[in-house]
Every structure is written in C-alpha cells, then in structure tokens.
Image 1 (cartoon, rainbow, N blue to C red):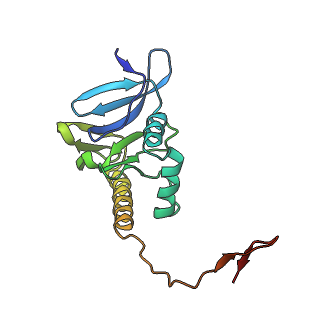
Image 2 (cartoon, rainbow, N blue to C red):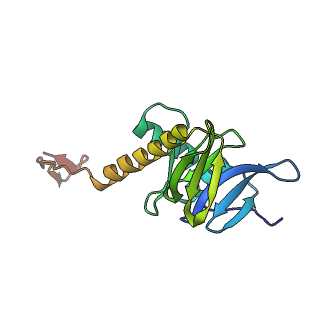
Image 3 (cartoon, rainbow, N blue to C red):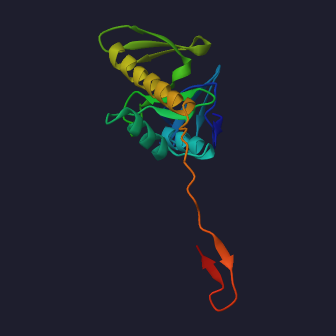
Length: 182
C-alpha cells in the first residue's frame, strides 16, 4: 500500500480518521477529493503539523476554540479561515476511531437507525457513523458557530483614537549630564 510520510490539510480534504497499518501503528486515513490514502502520522499529528505550517498549533487552535465557544468537550478547530477549512471531531481526539470532518464538505445527514447516521459528503461520498444524527449535527453546529464568531471578529477590527499628549522636550547641553529633559 502506498503511504505518505507527511500531509498538509487542504481545501479538498474531506475527512481524516485513524487506521492501523500492518505493523500496528496508528496512521491517518485521508479522504481527499476522489482519492484515499494513508499518512504515517496520527490524525492529531497531521492536524498539528498543518497548523504549525500555518502559524498555529493543535493546542493553540483548541485554546482559541475554547475561548470563543466556552467550556465544552471535543472542540472544532479553525485550520485555515481564508480557505474555509474548519474541522470537527466525532469523538475524543485520543480515540483511534475519531473522525475529523471538514465542515465545507458536509452536504447533509440522514438517520439510518437509532444510533447510526449517514453523512453525505462532497464528491458523492457517504460515511456511515455510529452516532445519533442529533449528536452529529450538534457537533457540526458548534463548528459553524466557531466559524461565524471568528469570521465576525476578524472582519470587525478594533479601531480607536488616542489623543496625543505633549511629550518630553530633550535638549543637549554642555557638562556631565549632557541631556536636559523638560
């Protein structure tokens, strides 16, 4: 099987999830556009490496989400606001079967049982997940809320005016202490 050593999340990244390779190492299964492949890093490592290349980190993105959304579990993350890349997890990120969905690639959801949901994605992909549809949509809604608040915050820059105060007048004189401040 062809496996990548490294990967950077991009606009075509539909989802990331954990998958063990033949040696028992946790890797990342990526669905990107119409392709799927494995990366020799865990999903959190792939996300962290992408964020580091964009001037942040997994921890920084999570802390930002916590500041914006308040205390909750399983925070969505801003990956690249300008490209519209926002991810949200389905389970605790420490769990191998956590799926990180890209918000922009979710088209709709459909309950297919009490605790099972079919997620319709871009590129005509579907993903069946062991989760109530309401639980899935609540996580999706939190990611949408994060996107909305951060977008609003970055479009409304702080503008203020500082009234200039008279400064010091410094002059050079002769002598030991050559500068005089008035």
